[in-house]
Amino acid sequence: MIEPWHWLVLGFILLIVEMFVPTFASLWFGAAAIIVAALLWLLPMSVSAQIIVWLVLSAVFLLAWFKFIKPLSVDRTKAGLGGSVIVGETGMIIVQPQPDRAGMVRFSVPIVGAAEWMCRTRGEQVAVGERVVVTDIVGNELVVSSMESQTVTHKNMQV
Picture (spheres, rainbow, N blue to C red):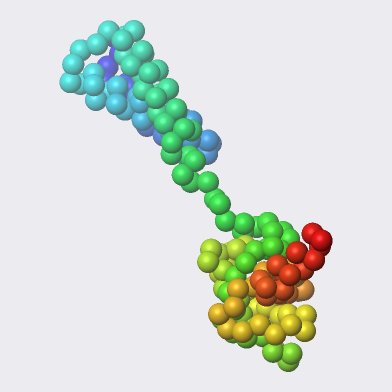
């Protein structure tokens, strides 16, 4: 005869195992075992019914984890990726770049861990509030170009 405390101990052992094996698999088996212990305290069940309830709960928890919960925790930032992921992104000038000092561009969403980046142009004048596109990276600064010049260049390339 399996007592409710057996399921409780099994559940806590599986939860402790999860601390050392970060797969989130034993977590759900442990949670299911703890629920079976609670159910067994409330109503009597045969051993086979206990095992079936435990397996069904474990499967439901695993399915819920992989189908619904885990996709919400996916990191959609580009932090940790190479700098080339910035090229082609569009932002807005918040500090106008000058020939002797860098300006600042702000992106609506943080890119590679930051929403604001130092920037320069290649001889082009851009004003505060103007939309720009990143064309290159030099050191820690972005090389930007105005959106109008990019669309003109793109149209000339199509002709």
